Length: 294
Image (tube, rainbow, N blue to C red):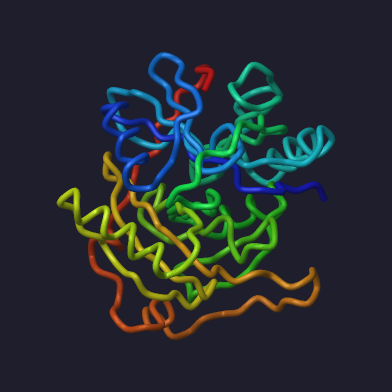
């Protein structure tokens, strides 16, 4: 089976592009690599983009970008995704900024993915307090089983862990998870996440939020699944960001047995407090515009 090989980027529709770019720059340390009209491409490393911000009259996330390693994988994943319940929205196409080629597919729950090949390289940003990479995405779905089958059989993700009947985590590379699925009444984005160096880096991020008059939603603390440190807060348009550190690495394929966590909310936070209502209830809508080049 062909599979996605890397978590690529997040594409967000924002109400005020300059405000959104300023937030991502000042709080997260991202740098803008290119701007085309009402679209900004931002990164934290030598990849052309790990975040796309699109000026829009209606906020929401446009798509989740996932990378494959070869042209053959791109063709195969397109066929697999359709067979696993996905609605393939486009042919394989060229002309998208910063990448070689791609196609779009909608999952059974309605989440939209850009499966792409070949990310353009750019100059490394100047040294600064920023993430090392875009790390993972957590989505909400009512029928988790159908969404999990799509991730597994369609996109080639491998199962990591499960928390009762409420959430599951999936990996496509050595990181414990690149995708998560959470049960919810409707399909929305739960959060998108960045990889930071350590607990001190999470603390400095919280300090920058405080300097702007904004408080974190939850954390810093440590999750059970993934064993990572975390800090959650809202971006400029109300979508939830997670900053992570020390995410568990997967052993060689075949040496890992997926875990079933049974402790409920105690497993979500190994250091104490249960998730606040703002964390549980935050959801960012899907707002994909077919036919637009991004």
